Amino acid sequence: MDIDAMVKRINELARKNKAEGLTEDEMLERAQLRETYLQNIRRNFRQQLESIEVVDK
Image (cartoon, rainbow, N blue to C red; front, side, top):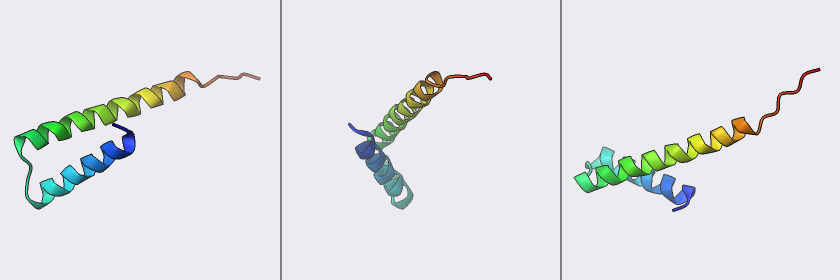
């Protein structure tokens, strides 16, 4: 699942949770999607940090 589809589904579940509540399966799906999303963000951030070069005068 790509990031855009993942965010879209997370947002759908968030709206549904506010409107009517979630089933246990939906809560589990939401937790898994959030964790996958956060892992992706952390991995990308770590890659950016590792690519930084320190340059001294």
